[in-house]
Image (cartoon, rainbow, N blue to C red; front, side, top):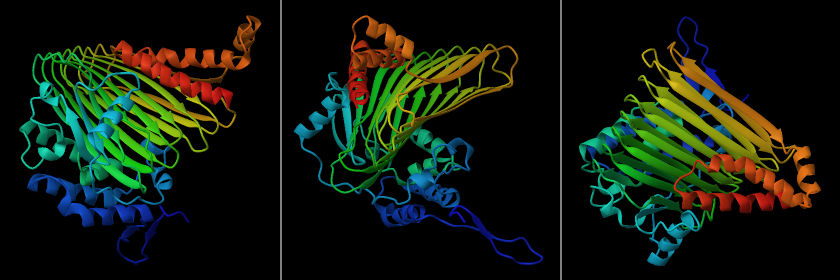
Length: 460
């Protein structure tokens, strides 16, 4: 009998009460909230939101394979135990903070505007006053008496209580970054949000970021989650409110390690004539789940996603799950996700496009592809179209394959060694997705990162 099985009391003549058995991790997480509630930031409004969220988590528990959206990433099984909660501690020195920023995307200077969060605690910032209308970059500074837009954003997401992972984030987030870009502002330099750890024992970390981009504004946002130096269970959420005519490039890089779990979510709302171009890259051999929910709230807007996953090891697992909600007419969405899988690496792609009845003239396309470097690798793909309008152009596709031996033979016949030939073919495959990353210096850095990983895996 599995832990998830329900036990029903046998009481004749009346409805039987239902009790859901909790795992050790679920019990520990609920107990953690009771222990740290008073130390979490936020005024009365947020405390009420947190209590409602932990109640929802107690009812839902960790997502598991019987939940359709989580059928390939059974978090209840992957998190049999909950790591102790990161309660903050001594902040790293300026030199360490600077090193983290430089490591965020190696070879790219992100020191002009950044915020660093270490084990769920705001640790350092620079240049944010030139970017944001807020005096400071950390959520914990504002949630006691937040500006109206920030309270509205946090409350809206906090109300989604049918997802246990999301409810847990609302209940336990300690800090994160907050950015408010004024109407018409064009930020010249990339703005970096860097997440790291202080090493030591395994810890559980929960963060929440909120970004508002005003009408006609432009920003390049780099969200980098450094490879943990010690095992971490991370639950992080980034909210973006993108106003009419705004343009947002959002690069998210997650470096994972075996023994760690990263549950990340991005929720974006697009106004009219907005342009949101995210690029997500996952590299390593840990467990990573990237959720992306995009809602078109204004007409003539564009969403264009690029994704690159490079995963291997004995337990490497990455899951890219998207819901693109075409709620209004005349919007365009594009998604291209490419995965390279080595050893026992596993990749999951779930992409749902919803076209609502009034969303005529929708143009949506998605493609997910995987290249298998090992017979033990696995790729699970589930593209979905849910269309309720009749004047639309929508399509999806998914493929998986090994390296083409004829192409390898062709390269070798030109004098190229076997390992180099294989690396060139894999690099060409993943490069099509990385070409969607912006700006050019970040694209080059990500390609170099992928190239180093590929050389190691092909030689292995």
